[in-house]
Image (tube, rainbow, N blue to C red):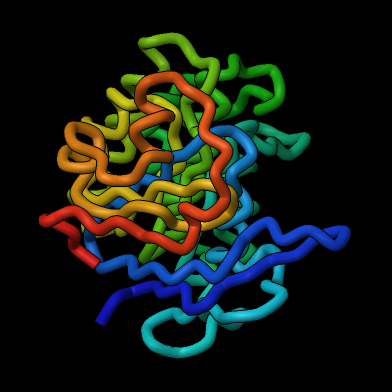
Length: 252
């Protein structure tokens, strides 16, 4: 059974449909990349899957049941711009773990492990908001992973970061996946998609227009929307939303 599922997922705002009847399966221990042009609904889809906003219709299933508060405790999300509390790097970790009801020696062990994996041990007592952009994002990923999620959502976590910071965050993601965490990643970076992804969902106009293994979709896209995006062309045909292409190696 997929760990996470979207079934007929729709979201409307101000009379406009922004997410249109999305069906998607996210299998345990897989790395799913979500790609598409700006404004096509990638970040919005992540927020729906994580339960931050409620769909207009359709539903999100977690382990086969409607996503609820308990299900969300098995998830974590890292945003493009990290949200840091007005306290030290260590205290940011401590707060996240306290919210999950984790204390005592287990909390201390998780804090130390998270700081070590993020290579922030020397900055543990520095105010989080004065850290560099790359350091803040490493802390955001470490904070999410310290809560031991079953699935980690990442919304363009390396946008605008330098190569060294990008490499460090990608390494955190690899290590999380190796430990059994299911990854759902939004990115515009084709190289990053190839490095970190197993499966790819391509969105256009709030719809899924193509799915498959990352290499197959990027090397030989079947949908015109994906071909246009990879070639740097604008593609505005809304009818493609009802013609989903599945690559031969589609894992869903």
